[in-house]
Each structure stands twice: as structure tokens, then as C-alpha cells.
Length: 512
Image (cartoon, rainbow, N blue to C red):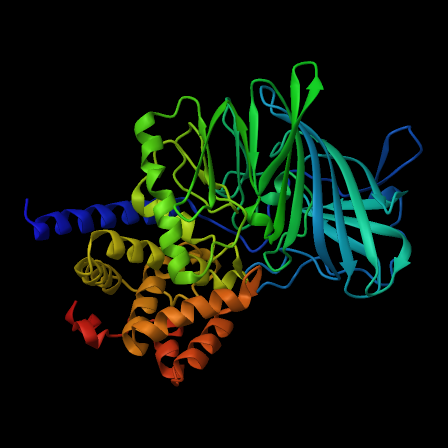
């Protein structure tokens, strides 16, 4: 086979994989502007009385406490205004959870350590389904109210701006029970139970299906997990495994901690009968992969390239930003992969080189630098898509990039679409976000030149790592690093519906 023939086959394979990914996501994804809500959820208030257990009283029978300074029940995201909550900054979550995999039940207590951003007499957490047993604030019982996806906690004493607070919520039940998931794709349900195990994926809003949380990516926090399961199940999670503790009665507690702040949609657990395989990248980054025992060796071998990929991306974007990387591959046919921080989620069949590169690249763009609002989703998906193209260019030769760009430009010119920097809530995971976003980055590379382009990517990550960034932030970095006025360029590529030309490659939408 000639080199050109091999290159053509590679591009065809890449297009097919990406097309499958987009088709799966586009057909499955429906998001309303409100978060997950119970199918039938009576509003209630409750409190704890000594050791007698919880007291739940319908709101009609017990008035809410005096609440002159409530925290906002929504962050005000332009696409999902009810996601997240205002008035405080979540700093750290401790999740203590006992999971029974067979019946799919959990008993848990979550403690959120936070700082008040304003004077408060109440605050809200996002939480759906499950049964609240008790709520405490700084160790003191607290009254609470549930309505839809909101858990309102009335503070025993007013909180002043700048003060620290610790909020604990104990609860139990089956995640998702009583919650209408009929329109939710499998990557947004949060707690995914498939009989033999559990995966967790919740983008943009599914974390609140299994723990109470301030569910907006702008409020990143560190996490600690204490997860107890029946042997021989094991638990993988974000960060590093700290210890395993025999819990008696054939159970083990797995203690994990993630020292870098994380958006709630990036939290994950992998529970099941997994094989743990560890290695290092050539530059010494720890890689720990969890493969469900029944995953075929051929599928496991697909991930052998991870170390080389990781070091290559580090040479472009800056040092790998976390303590480790790896994947959890579940033996269930998930139609997606998700970049949960330090431990990406895969199913048993959606595994290929492009997807592996895409999810790994998210560790820099999406996980370390997290979108400021959901309107900025192209900063995640466009960047990860382009990173996978960069990997192909590195692995298979310079000419393949032109082939990829030509073919994807052809695709995007063939149908009308929204601009990547404002795709709309109904198009959060559409072609314009992934493909046109990646094309915009390649056009920027051609516009400013090789050195400036890669300096822009490096500087952008270095400036905003472990925090959040908006499209405006990226544009400002690009202009500052390149020394060019890129206003018209970004307006055309990111905010106009018409697909711009790429004159350097002789590409024009008028030709299609």
C-alpha cells in the first residue's frame, strides 16, 4: 500500500469515528433549561430531632423559617440559569458512601466545606431524588426544604461574608428512582447502574443525582471519597487512591482524594470487578487504568499509546496538570466517552485512537481550564477535537492535517449550523462545537503562524489552569500573545453563522 493510500484510509477512519460520535450525541441529547427534577416530588421541610431520625413535614403544614438573606437558587448561567447556586464558594467535598451494587442502593453523608461570598441566612444545594435523613451546619441540626432539584438549607445562625461553613447532608435510596430520566442521555444521568457495576457521568448536569452539590462548573472544589463496597468489587475515582480499609462483613472502603479543584460534572466513580493496570508515561506521569475483568485484551491494548500521547500533549500545552491519568473501561456499551478528571469514562465499544486522544486532551482543556459557563463549551470540545488532529499529525505525518481539515471543512459547509461560541443550549454537543471549533483553531494557526499559535495554547492553559475561562479570556490571550488584532477573525469564526473561508488552503464555503 502506498503512503497516500494509507493516509486516505486513516482520514476515512477518523471521519467515520467522529461522525459516529456526533450522531450518537446529537440523536440522544435533549436538555431543558431546568435541571433534573423528580417525576413527583412534594415540597417538604425537615429537620432532625435528637436520635429519633428525620422529620419531614409538607410545606403547607409548616412555614419556612424567617429568611431575610437567602442565597440565590441558581447561578445564572446563560444556558442553564437554574444550575448551581449563589452566595458561597464550595471549597471541598467529603463523600462517605456505602453502595450495594445488586439492589442499587446507597447510604451516604456528604460534607461540603465552603466560604460565604455574602451575608446569608440560607443556602441552596442541587440534589434530586434520594431521601434526605438529616442536615447539619457546623455540627448543628438545620431545617431544610426540598423543591424540585433544590435543597434549601436554613442556617441555624446568620453567616457573614467571608466566614467559613461546613454543611453535612445524610441521605439514602436508589439514585435516579422517582426522577424522570426519559429524555436524558446516558452521559447525563449521573449514577449509571448496569447490573454488574456503576459508572458515573453527569455532563452538563448529573452529579446532583447522587450527591448534593453546587452544580455549576465555575464553582470548582477538591474532593475526598470514602466508598464502601462488597468484595470483590473495587472502586476507582478521581485523583489518587489513599488507602483501602477492611470494613468487615466482606466489605472494603476505598479512600480517594483529588488535590486539584474540579467541576462537579467531572466527578466519577467506577465500581465493579475491575483489573487495575498501572504504568508511567516516558516522562514519568503515573497512568492507572481500570478495566472491567471481562474487557477483551484487544480493547485494553488500544490504550497502550496513552503515555506517548500524554507526553506529546505536554510538550505542546504545558506539563500534565494532575497527579495521575487513566481510564475506567466498563463492560457496557456506552455510546460516549467522558473526560472525568484524571480517570476518563469509557464503555466497551466506543474505543479508538481519536477518542482516546480527545479525552486525554481534555485534561488540559476542560478539566484543568474549565469553561466559565456552558455557552463556552467549544473551549472544551473544539480544543480536544483539534488536539486529536494534532496527535494524528504527529503520529502519521504533516500532510494528514490538510486532509483532515479539508474533509471536515467539507462536512461543515454542507449544512447550516450555529456558531461555536453561541451554539444554544439545544446544540451543546453538536458538530459546530466540536468540528467548527477545531477548524477555528486551525484557521487561527494559519493566521498567526506556528510559533504564535502554540504559544497561545501554552499561555492560555498556564494562565487559567485549575480555574475557569471564557471565550473572551481566550481571545484576549490570543491577541496579547500574537500582537495582532484578531477581532474580525474571531467574530467570523466564533460568532457568525456563515462558515468563513480558509484562504491559505483554498477553502471557501461558496465552493460547496
